[in-house]
Image 1 (cartoon, rainbow, N blue to C red):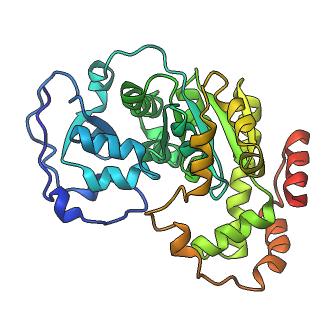
Image 2: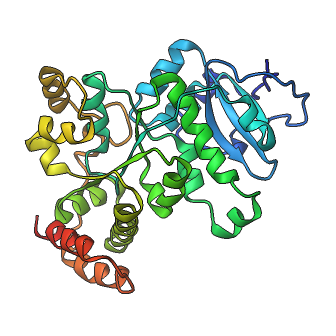
Length: 335
């Protein structure tokens, strides 16, 4: 077995700490500790890549913790909170140590956030469909600056994405639905190319209600929201043509026609109408910092929506999108 490197913190001292992103400096590790060849521990998940040390950090968990992590609204925060130890693997040993698995065919769910993607995952899992929400190492790879990516050995970034998904597939199966963080819109093709058998789903919503939701929850300015939308539409336009199996999902359809919408994503699933109805009645993000109970009292700047069109005009000034994407965008503004 790999020798586990011991954390300087315990799971108890981590408490309810929430990170924006997982990172190698979350823990003080002795990365020069002896390394023994073998296999990854059975309850390990990809945590993040330590690019400076050219290693992947894998978090190790109890079986109960693993179940809680995979069921969490935001996997990355629960993974940080429940980590028990860390295993460090050099990049060059990665392929050798990953568990053997059948070809992976995950469904990657992209969105600009606040479009019901967490709700989608809850509905799918209520019907027994394997789904997980927001593994952070995929976001790390999608946001990697091009200059830094060029310094890595060829194929490294793709191998790191594949390693992350391989361990999710070990737990949930090769056809797992993976809801991505909105940060993955920076470079979505990195993920698609790393997982050539994947399907891509992109979730959208009428812009006015979507923008108000972002503003209320994250206190974002019109310009912040406009650039979030710009990155999302850029990603959608690329995925539409780069991914052979591409599905567009409207938040409004997920609410009004959940069974029909879910069948487009999981056509072979035995959907549970009662379970899906129960999910719709609950808050899919209950217990998190973006739960309805946490954000309900936040005020909305009365100047936010009037200022949004001008912000969008600036954010989208240099955009060159395909005709289908421009038509979709017009529909998003109308809804």
